[in-house]
Structures are given as C-alpha cells and as structure tokens.
Image (cartoon, rainbow, N blue to C red; front, side):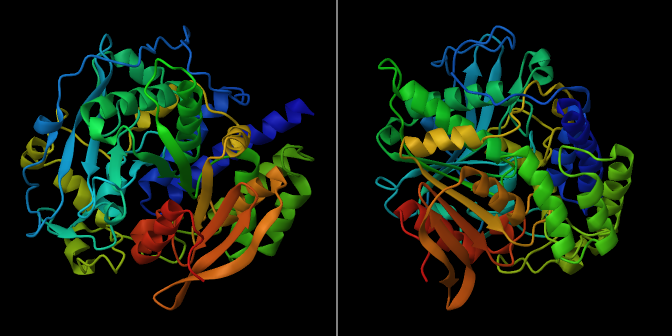
Length: 490
C-alpha cells in the first residue's frame, strides 16, 4: 500500500508540475510546479512538528538575537522613484540579519498605516512558491503602490492593506528577491524548517529595530506555499513564547489565501476543479477516478495517461485565474493592455514590477544590496530539504491555542483551488458555528463564508490565486473583517 501511495505521489508531482508550468505566465505557479518536480527523487516528508531547536543537519544557526547593521532611521524611505504625490504614511525597507556568521539577511518592505499607525496591528505577509518574492504582494497585490505600464512610475492602491494595519512584506528565504546569504551553501540546504526559523529570527530582530511594535497584536498572512510558511511560523512563535528569555510576540491570528496545506487534498481538489469548471472532459475525469483512486493506484500507467490528459486539455490559459486574459508575448503590446487602474486587472503587471525593481535608482531608494531582482528563485527548489506532506496537525495545534485562523480562497484559481481548501478542512471534521452564507462589498456579493469551530473559510468571488490583484476592494473588506474578529458583512 505504501509503495503504491508513493508511486501516485511522485506521478502527481511530476505531472502537476508540468501542468503548472504550462499555464500562462504565473511565476508563482511555475515555482510551485518546479518545486513539486524537484521532490520526485525524495520520499515524502513526514508530518513535521516544529520545535525551533538547533538542527545540526541543516547547518543553520538558531541564535535568535543577531548583530545588526541597520536601524529604523536608516531604513526609512525618503521617496520611491516615480511615486505619486500626497504620500501620507511612513515606509521603510532594508535588511535584518538572521545569521551573522553565515552572512544571511532577509529583505523587508514595511508600510505603516496613514491613520492611527501607533495603535493598529502588525501584519506580516509572505508570498509562496516556495522561493517567490513577497514584493509580488507589495507591488501587485495588497501594497500601497502599483507600477504603471511605463515601469517608471507608481500609482496609489486605494485598497491597500496598510489602510487597516501596519504591513511588513518579508522576502523569504535567503536567495529570494533582494534577500541573500554570503554562504552560498545556504541556498542548497533551504527547507521548511530553516525558512521558519529564519522568519522567526527576522521578526524577533525586526522588533528590536522597531520596539514600538513589541506590544502590538500580530497577524501572519500569506498565500500559495504560504500555506506552509504562515502556520509554521505561527507555531514557532507559540513555542518560543513559552520561553521567558524570548521576546513575547502577541500573535492573534493567521490568514492564508489559496494555500497549499495538505498534499492529498490539494491534488484531489485540482482534478475535481478542472472537471467541474469545464476544463476537463468527462472521459478524462472518469479515467482519473477509475485508475488513480488517489494514492492507491489501480493502474499506474493508465493513471499517468489520464493525469497527462487532464493537464493538457485546458489549453493555454492562466491557471492563476482561468477566466483572465494572458499578457501578450510581444512586449511592444504591453502598454496597450494596461489601464493603470487598481480596479482593472492587468495581466502584464509582473513585467512592469520586474522592470521597476531592477532599476538602479529604485534599488538605491529601497536600500537594496542585490542588483538583480527576480520574482522567484527556481535554483532553490532543487535543494529544498524538507516539506511536510500536511500542515493540518499544525493548524489543529494553533486552533487549540486560540489562534484565529482564516483560510480564504479566490474561486477562479485552478492552481490551489477552493475545492482543495474545502477538502482539507473536511479532514479536520469541525462542527459549524455559522452556516454558509454570502457576504458583500458595495452591495454586491463579495464571496461566501462559513465559520467552523476554530476556523473560518472565506471565498472571494471572481478572484484568482493572488486574491488582492483581481479583487482589491473585496480583499480589503475580507482582511478588515479578519482583523476585527468579525465575519465579512452580509
């Protein structure tokens, strides 16, 4: 039985990885696909119980308080090139050293709230991949600015999450975006455990740099493979809060969007989503259910054939949002597709962001020390040392400790679809506190919500994998409700 289950997992990771690469230009999806393929030669990791102790096998130091070279004053951004007039909040960026011996440092961008920043909560944001930059979130999703189609100027995001909280975007792990290590071996031994430890070390040292936030309520948010990053970091915070010698972090909740949290239900949810959204034929769906039987293959060769068909049949679409347009291949057509409006999704926004962040004047303004910025670092995937097959035990532990947990899902994402999230929640066998109902923004249905005992599921209507990119107003309503501890408005 174990051999058959393992065969199915390897096959699924290979074929699904191929599928995700085919879809559009979704770099975070491509990173996830490449990562799954890289796991082919490795047995699935067991459920990982993170203890935040020294792991001699990784070589990563766990001395949390590290010597630092930066300060809050030197990290303050005077102005970003091309930023609009009337910027009414403070923002900062720079590096926090997480291992001084290895020379490993994580880059961050921090946007305070324009109003009442001295009392509002602190929100951390992580993009997924793994190994994709959180500046994707800052510059194309929930940050205060978006990049215009000239790749030189910025415009204001009226639905930025720093309207309701003080938001840190952390590029994690080292080797992603502007984050780096002077020990190149670090890039070949990165995994869930080291990423979680470095993220915790980052937060502890960041709070030393910004001590006024030490007593604030803290919320951790993210998307995609952030379904690993976010719960794992939260769990480590809980463990270390029991140590009287550590900084007490006032963790209140986590929110994960379209998160990869459980391998089996994610795979099952992908196939079912493709069929129920008319992207797979009846014959292919029947073949998968007949021959694959989910981790207990009846006929591995037939299973392989039907999974391949399942991933070819959708054609050249963007798996991040199955109804969204693709960015034109001809770069000369880019400016013709853009409206420079936060209310209109621009499929070429990644191109504008990448060009902007690779400008020397922008990097100087951001205090960046790395001259070449990219959305994701594929080279890290091959050295990813550990990845839990399921995060559900960690979620159970967070629930038992009273941590607010929201799993939200854009409903037109096929990479980590809402079906995968619902199947994962069903495995927890939770009782329902508030029955499924619609919620609204601007007198329109914004999505649907169901509150379970210890966990809330929120869907965001007509949103893809990067929810705030496609539905910024609905995303702001959703995250505002989360921070308030209330369900989205009916």
